[in-house]
Amino acid sequence: MPSPPCNLRINRPTPTTVSFTVSTRPPLTTLTSRLIHYTAVASRIIIAASIILILATKWCLWSTKEGWNHLPAWLSQSLPGQGAKFVAENAMAMYLVPVSMAVLWLCARRGYTEESLLILRTLGIQTTTSSPTYLSTATTRFIPTTSIQDIFIHEAFKGFEVRFYLAIVVEGEQDVVVVFPTLLPPLSILEQVWRGARSCLYEPKA
Figure 1 (cartoon, one colour):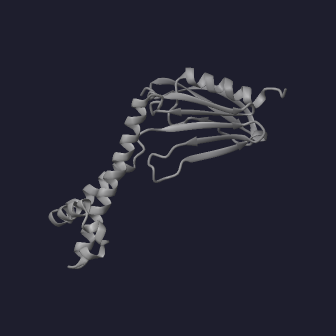
Figure 2 (cartoon, one colour):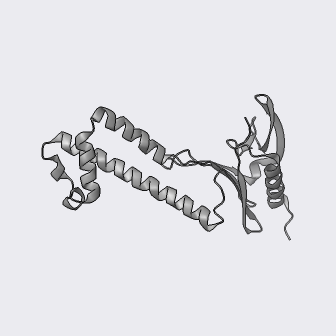
Figure 3 (tube, rainbow, N blue to C red):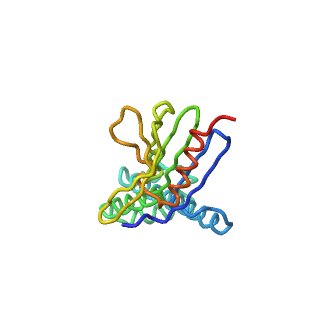
């Protein structure tokens, strides 16, 4: 299976610090791309809030005959509140709940994968892989500079194809640490990261 289309962003705030980020999200470099991205985020928030309001209304109506009064008056009397009440009154819970959970799950999904390599020459290396949803935290690992023995590009078979990957040899560990393990970006990106990482870690001080 080929690598998903991804792009590389490099940030070098100081001569001894550099960050490489590989992402499947298109770069937000134009006004149109920013508008599409933030519109999609806003739509997810609105849809998720609407689903939560409908479920809360359904719970109030189910728990007591006067349950609708449990919600704030300004909310229950608003247009979204009235719409949520209409849906809650007419939708059966056995269908409403699973459909709502599925929609909330889709809204919470990130929709893209992002992995990064942060290099601090005097401290070490931190690898980060974004979580699949906005509700969970990213997976990170920090490797002290004193534990780093080497950084290299290697190749391996994945299925019926050869894939390249960037690996860190850590002192005292039998297995190498694979950088960008989820995306496995193409060789052209790996070469840029490899050169930049070695330059930042091993470049002699001026």
